[in-house]
Amino acid sequence: MSSIKTIIIDDESLARELIKAYLAKFEEIEVLKECEDGFQGLKAIQELKPDMIFLDVQMPKITGFEMLELLDEPPVVIFSTAFDQYAIKAFELNATDYLLKPYSEERFTEAVNKAIRKIGQSSQLKEETQQLTATRREQEEEIDRLVVKTGNKIQILPLDSIHHFEAQDDYVAIHAEAGKFLKLMRMKHLEDGLPDGEFIRIHRSHMVNVKMIEKLELYEKDSYLLTLKNGKQLPVSRSGHGKLKEVLKY
Amino acid sequence: MDHPFIKNKNIILYTLLWVLVWAVFTSALYFFYDFNFEQASVDSLVYNLLFYGAGLAYWFNVRYSSLEKSQFFNLVVSHLAAAALSVALIILLSQTILKNIYSDQAYVAFLNESLPWRAGLGVLYYIIIVLIYYQLIYFDYLKERSTRQAQLESMLKSSELEMLKSQINPHFIFNSLNSVSSLTIISPEKAREMIVKLSDFLRYSLGKQSDQMNSLKEEVKNILLYLDIEKVRFGERLNIVVEMDEKCESLFLPNLILQPLFENAIKHGIYESLEKITIKLSASCESNVLKVSISNEYDPNAIGKKGKGIGLHNIKERLRLIYGITNGVFIHKTDRIFTVRLEIPQKG
Image (cartoon, rainbow over all chains, first blue to last red; front, top):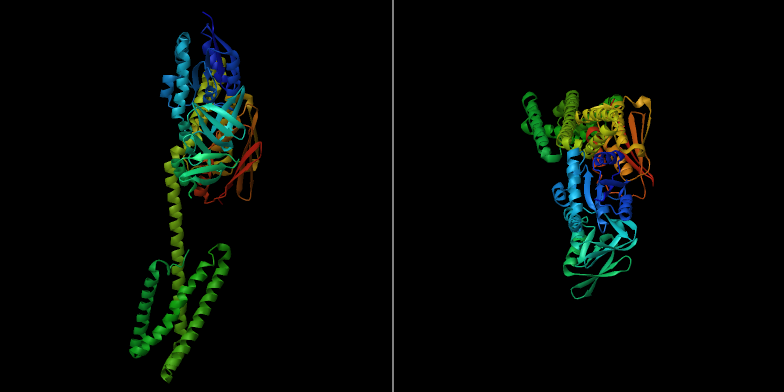
């Protein structure tokens, strides 16, 4: 049996040491690299294509969740974090495992064994990890920034810099100061997660940053046209007009 | 404070009391000086009506001269002058009016003769009215103080748990325990050391009442313990600098008030950066104010998760409730360094 390649992504060196120490028992597992943040992690995963990763949630630059979202073909993931408030239950069902720091060696071994079994049946893998990211999206609380990838470059977009969103099939096009980006997600997810009053869904396929609105004019009877500060014009649906009225109080 | 006799229909009570005074005064003239009822009541009306008006005006002398010790002499002078002037003026006015109404010789003689006791009575009115005003001001002050106290207590009680929660981040504890777990394999001595530090820190932080005051020395000692633990977790990434004026060490501040500031510094400094981050604590004191600054470097490029500002808000709220000050927290931000300064008044 060929060895199982793994990468440890955690910003605390002692936390990584512990994982390495626990892994020493598993002869078939080879630690390819240790990473201190999500950027390094992403790069290492793309280059080294590990079978399995150990992932912390809270790290500098981008979180473990955000990193995972950017992967097209994520490996088997074992979360290792002190955060328990992200509905652990859901994770335990979908992530390969979710280790709450501090954890025992038995608990760790159990998680690794589960992962090894999963790697054996790698055909199901992709589907399930996608399910994991989907679950996270469902239950995520508030969105306060978006992380996107263009080629090998990762961009973090603060909400202030985003002009508007446009639905494009399975993707959402994000029009921001830094340019246009495509991200695999649904408008509904944005609508639920973005802070109230800062973004308005003005149309089935358009959502705008309130601060970017320049003017609203009657286009035809019962149909409005919204102009953004950058000159772009977007259609407003009837229900979108109602929401605009409510938020802008005119 | 508004005029206590005018607000809340108190004017009715005030008027009724004067009606009573008028009645007593009238009866005195009627029974002891053998005036007819009409003359007695008119005399009483003129004299007391003038004091009725003056009584309302006395409020301003009370209201706008404060009761501080340093101004005690000024206060006495102000009241003596007000009493003398107002009584003299009222007697002059009342004598003139009454002489115009009743000009018979016997009555004029009575008026002249009654001058001393009318003056005495006037001064007595002055004293009574002014004392009532002071009573009311004092009650008002007590009431305000007790509402503030009650507010403070209820706030402390209801938020005690909440505050402890926000002061000691549970993730800090779990992450530290994870580090201990790791150290037991790599270096058992360091693991023991860390457990002792963590225990000392928790004992200090969990055992305190929220309204308790502590010396700066104790607070800083505890904060350094906290930072020491974080240093085990983050190693070289965390650099601590303390600049403390020794004479400030014995000054007091509300317990654990610095904790959330250091947690913020760690969160925005260390959590968001891989570079070495310096967190600096400096304390100075002058003219009964303790100034404590906490600053942290941060990575200006990091687009961190925005905090909700609860920590700072809680600190402002505590300072307001404990000291009654609204301007104790100052924030300064440059493109690399974030600083929060607390100015804490010292009692006595």
